[in-house]
Length: 325
Length: 293
Ligand code: SF4
Ligand code: SF4
Ligand code: SF4
Ligand code: FES
Image 1 (tube, rainbow over the protein chains, first blue to last red):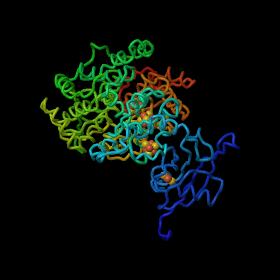
Image 2: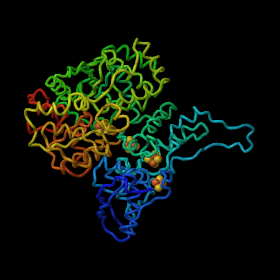
Image 3: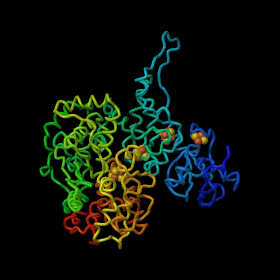
Image 4: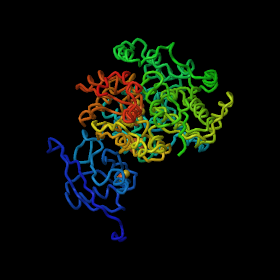
């Protein structure tokens, strides 16, 4: 392959450097290189190591988007270094790129991080098929294509951690399980062969439970395998309600409160929703509510303008409901 | 270009806790000569919480809302990021699954409606960019906002998941480096503030169940804008607005630093630039005082 016919351009790389054994603080090193349109981000990491500084450290193994070790951040975007094309990066961010580890506070050496929290959380969701195996089966154990489809590709996860370290709640709260652990929980909950009775309840009670997700969809954009972890979190929510395992708490009442409000008004009654979700806890919202009220930001229940043709909405709520609480 | 006309899905917030957003939407539409037909039959979009409880019901209700826009043969315009996400997600799922569409239409049939998939669904921000055009808007500016550093706050549900979002508008948006709101600020004559949190989450959707996490996200967002020397924040999402405008007390406490900035709806910003009188833009409905008009 001749590189002379391939487009090249100059790119400045601002690279995170840190050695936990020697450095008190991380620092950034600049490298300027001619980059060809054929290269992926991992090629650049290799060239930094081979041509500039042999001590530069990062993880990689398969170079095929399978092992999941090479996830890093480029200008804040989580990415699998071996899959991300430089052309795309330049198109989105221009010619000044910042290369950083998935999580700066977990950096050990340069782009290598301590991923222990990821693995610990993953392990907690019983991430394997939990079932009695018949040692002497007399027939094949068949999973139909339709049954396999319910996994919704959650089984494609390569545990790269991109979603986990893109999640703003993981960043702030050690108690939150994170999108990858939840996606794994869903993967086995949805599997017809699995008989685990407690995983769903466990997942709901573990750490800060399944309800603290802020629904930012960072994990959806982060995942190189397009697993859409937040969608799986939504499915876990649905499963909790369908199985009757959802306990009454602020989050579940908040979700159910929408149905109540829609049934009554078509639209939401924001004030009553907070009241129903919080119960006695509502007092803590009073100071802000008073301020909002004084600015004309709170409509009392009797002031709510209901949807036109409300009877249609009520009919649909009756005929289309699939969950119970 | 003929007169632009859309079916307006206001969502619940604009009718309740952000009356200023409703007022300024109408004021700006009038200035731009855009006709908005309000979908008064619409129900709540479920705000991604009904979806957690009962996914199918939320699909049916959102499909009903869209069916009303289709009856008018109009593109549906939303003015809330979360309405946009839930409505567009419904459309995407129904348009990509004949089976789901059939099941939803069985229910809609009971009330004499049908979801066809003929209406586009787009946020007002992208309607202005794609259909009206920022060049034309720029020509209409009478009070350029040139003395202001304005921090764009995009709001998750207008930019992620990017694949779905990019189906709903023509001008491509990258969630890691979004530009639409920055371009709007520039068209209004303002200076944009670049800061890390501009495409991050305000924490709104976990405010009740995870107040601490939620308040930290809010605090970080306002702090980021302040450190970027912003005079104020602008957002296309009334939920982000509520969070950043009304929750500064909790946010300051959570991050251990006093944070507060005026937070304008994008419609209010456009209105100011187009010379709408401030009282038509509802500035008095803000909890954090808008002290510069
Ligand atoms: S959507 Fe939820 S799980 Fe996914 S990154 Fe955001 S907070 Fe984390
Ligand atoms: S869900 Fe996707 S981003 Fe998250 S660990 Fe698995 S493959 Fe990586
Ligand atoms: S930024 Fe916050 S309020 Fe706005 S859409 Fe995202 S989660 Fe919702
Ligand atoms: S090197 Fe294995 S996934 Fe990138």
